[in-house]
Image 1 (cartoon, one colour):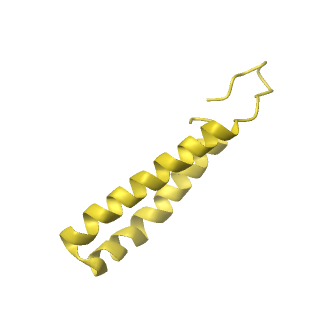
Image 2 (cartoon, helix red, strand yellow):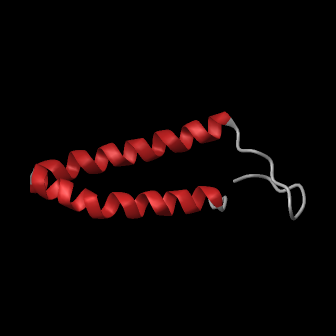
Length: 69
């Protein structure tokens, strides 16, 4: 999370923190894909991802824009 200097100003997030978050998000996505594909088959997986992926993207966007993570 960014350190607050005062109520209006925040420091930019550093590259190491951003790379760590990107690696975690990609790793979780790959793990979910590798788990769901064999269990339900490719067609069901992509139907499921069509609903989950956009919602997840919006939630991640809000979390990063509001500095929740």
